[in-house]
Image (cartoon, rainbow, N blue to C red):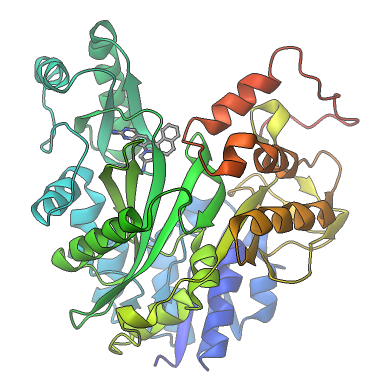
Length: 467
Ligand code: MV4
């Protein structure tokens, strides 16, 4: 095992990784920006290195500063968390060139999987079913028209360099395709510096089901079952659960086993997630693979008893996988919701500000991952995630009741600060959601129901304009 690991992240995930390291007897070092000087991770870590001012570009995305911090503290490995540099193949390469173990897949594997077109080709060859569409990038508008005509509308134009819902446009009729094609290419060029796009059949009323895998560097792998992440707004997940509900056990096993086969075939190592869409007929289609620990990993931990960050550390240190597939026995249901400092009544605009009260829930089978505390200042520079509340229960019904109970205890207040808690409670109340029959359309339906002549009273204090 490593002697010292550098944690190249902030917020709740920096704490999560720090705790895993400490449990394994690994010394911890964190990097931080000037805005995070008094963060919980900085206080708890054995070492902390300031790597720059608040803007991410100059701190958490500054590869040179992070490598220099690793040298200063004598770290052997870097844990990137999620977001920031976690899926940056160039950063993984830079780590290797500096004698540091990047805790994640090999750089060339990450590069091949970060390119969505190449990932689709590799996974298709490994036997994973894809949505109908082009595997190769579509180079001209004429080619796009032809591909779309072949698969039928609606279609979705996606950036090859995209992922996580960034850089995609749904097209409902042929008349809209030329403009959508041009717009997606221009946006992809601006955001990713790569204007390649591909075209897929757009699957409506599908569920977003993902599979957690762990693969070591010796050819061994296990899957840890499924999660449903269909409750999303603009590709920000709000509620996640394990296992995916209301699908037959046979379908869940097939998706999970197929996903693991794909991951092993492409040489994936570490903790990863394969995303699928599952349609009403329970047919599943591979979308993309995420090469990082994910925000929603706690629900998988709660149903399997496997500490995914411990496993990431062992795998990166070269230890053969400590689990056989038969030993992974998912039990019960876990549900998590994200608590963001955002105003659901104002298009989920971030609401920066100082928290005067911060009282997270407790109680049986209730896990809160947070870096928040009274006095914490939600700044304008980073993601607004304040906490994740996850609960476990023997069945889904009780898990949802338990999450409602926990959210009822959670107090987060501060001038101008709003949270996603009221909106999540509406989701938990929804009849379709309660039955587990919801799809990716749920959030828009709830927002549309609330919009005209909203019965919600205006908040007492007004939030500042979006940061
Ligand atoms: C899709 C799709 C339907 N058809 N692709 C969003 C995140 C990224 N990983 C892929 N995503 C989607 N890709 C095809 N061919 C639906 C989604 C999607 C989604 C779309 C609209 C609203 C919410 C969504 C939630 C999850 C996935």
